[in-house]
Image 1: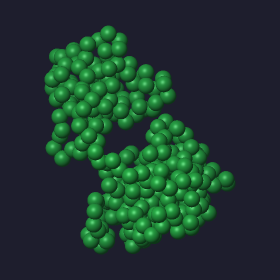
Image 2: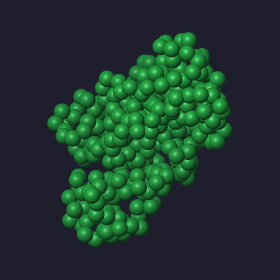
Image 3: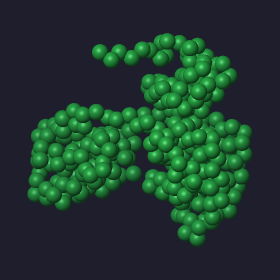
Length: 322
């Protein structure tokens, strides 16, 4: 998707987006952020044709209730824009690399069995909506796909009908984080659920392109998934008694990963040998992202603590605090 840009830096923004996409990067979310930056410049610096430090640092100011990680995502495309402008001989101020000072690693909420059971019972009771005829069919399958397959919500949300092979039981994940495609396999139960869903949703959308179609047959936007989650989660009794960080949609993916590692430990599997498979399944470009889950397992699953001595020291090295 290409966003329209109208401000004084529009020609440079369009050039950056075109460059990134020509290299194979979707650059959709970054393009959306640059659209917001474009509007910011039109509103606050309508007569400025140079990307100055006042413009850049004003954009880089931490907003009220904004998480440092959110600030990082917001300023990175603008920093790239300034570097692009400099590369073509146009003077532009580059936001320093130490802003924000440090990205904070979020500690995910690992759902308990009771929490998962209550949540799935709640979404199974989802009622049909006159505004979205397929919503009550979509929500139970969508969230189970996140948890049972460890998908990112964007990966499930942007699935096309052609990506889901209901004969082979495979799902093709295209252009995900890291700009890599991958194929995952569905369990027998998940495959059956997808087949039933596909048959029922075709009644409402016989020619849909999106596997999970909105009321117009297109892809849902990101915000609706968060809305769905809180619509059901926030009304659960377990949601009012939980501890730790408040859960997010992305935590279904974390819960899948921790559950899978815990199961392998119970089965006596060699974690050194199996961890690369989990990394590929999740679509991680760096195995260090998968190693992170090893630090979560002992906190939430006692069985891992009991057997952790059999895990290679090279996998969980001592931390040097010096």
